[in-house]
Amino acid sequence: MQIEPTTPTVKNPPEQFAGDVWLDVVAAPHTEDQRMTVATVRFAPGARTAWHSHARGQYLRVTSGVARFGDREGNVIEVHAGQTLYTPPGQEHWHAAGSEGFMEHLAMLESGDDPATTTTWLEHVSDADLAGQA
Image 1 (spheres, rainbow, N blue to C red):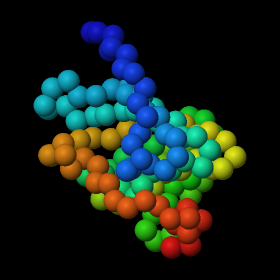
Image 2: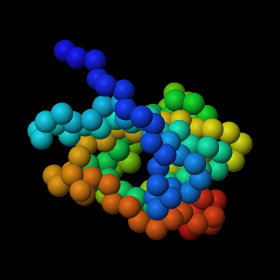
Image 3: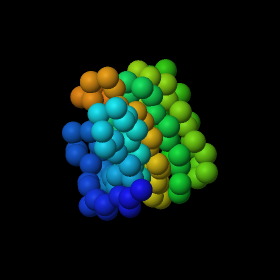
């Protein structure tokens, strides 16, 4: 057993996020046969990810605030603190905080067979996408 070292909070890059978004790693693989990564991600009001997908899917547990998640079909789902959203492998989606307050979620995912393919980042989310007008 061991207590994991605390890693510094990282501000996520503007190539993949619009607005201010911070990440704290909770768990990461220690050996090449481990795949799980867990992070706490905090979004400022109105902040959002770019479109992206995950090779093995992703679980997102909203821990505070209200999250908005969207997919390519134009579906936008509000998820409240205490609820968990699952996105299946390969589904292109985005995450966002509403304009009225901060939102925090735990992101849980497994690495792809090639760790470089774990998350595929795409273009930024438009205002129409955010409004569910795809």
